[in-house]
Image 1 (cartoon, rainbow over the protein chains, first blue to last red):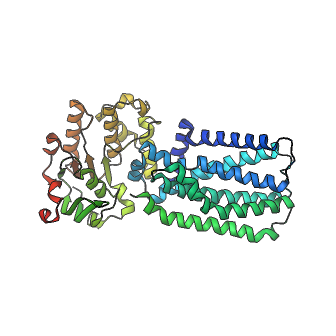
Image 2 (cartoon, chains in turn red, brown; image 1 turned 90 degrees about the horizontal axis):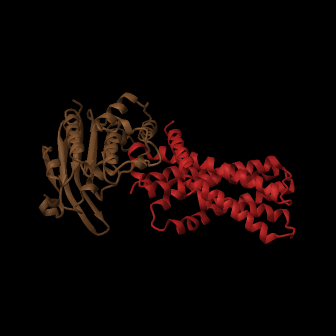
Image 3 (tube, rainbow over the protein chains, first blue to last red; image 1 turned 30 degrees about the horizontal axis):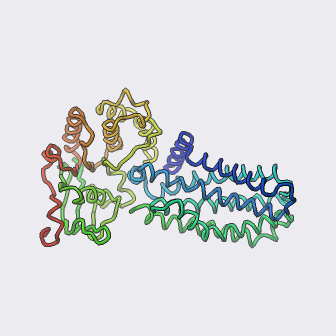
Length: 219
Length: 215
């Protein structure tokens, strides 16, 4: 309940300041436009479109999700949060906020891909939906803990992609594989190994994040 | 009177290789006002942050106990009210919204009577629906007191409590300190003589720069 209250505070704050939403919207718009201009009238393969989808999602997450903690640090309200909530409440609240943001952002990107790229054809939609669900959870959890780490650092802008790349790489590679399977129309059963890898990644990242956050949160 | 005790055991803090203070042994008990003084850079704010559990000491320990029970670090924020120049409220919310969110994040039901009482005490009641962004520095300082007192803390830590306040604001703060000190524990970090006059005992941080002098 406390975490939900913190999420509500962040959501209300986001609606008023548009810290993350503007950055995300602009990034999605610009990236998809650049991809479309560079492709022109060329026909690209289905696999490549699936790959491009996750590239756009990865870089969009880089541009917007760090705001959860960076905005608190920039406004000097980190101490305020430390005085009213336990570290686990803060992490949970920020995680709920990033989850919602990731789901909205990735839903918009996927819909835009479906409309703008004719070669983006998913033959097994339930498999893609599973990959989308667990992938988004993984991106949100990883981005939240990375955002907490970099908010304490001096060079925030550079550090976020540097830290994110090795942490998100196994996730993105698995998601690329599952997207390929969904495009091919493979069954969920035959893709079970990759789905389990995704679930394990989410569980491991969530556990590590909750364990580490106490140390990150206090100076 | 409640029985809130803070014990500082051989407390020391270094920033890198720079010694801030070392060897502080002290006990604070409720019903008193304690002062922490020292020149700029002597570590007043650092010490109060350590007491509040916001930063860790390099050596030593801080123990908080209430009614003879040790308070767990993750529960400490429920017992502490903190005012500091480094504390900021959410500019994009009104004073009232800030207080509502702070209560709900603490897991408490928002008490409008308590909030209105404090807003009245700090002469901000008529401006409670205004965004904090539009407040003057003195008004923001008054809001910090409301933030610190809303959940009726047992320990009130005041770092430079009268900075940015006019004489009326200072009088209100002194009245409030006198009132709160009847039952609770108050620690003030300041260089202002008028602030330190309220204290029954003052820690001079300069004495703890050198371990031998401190002992």
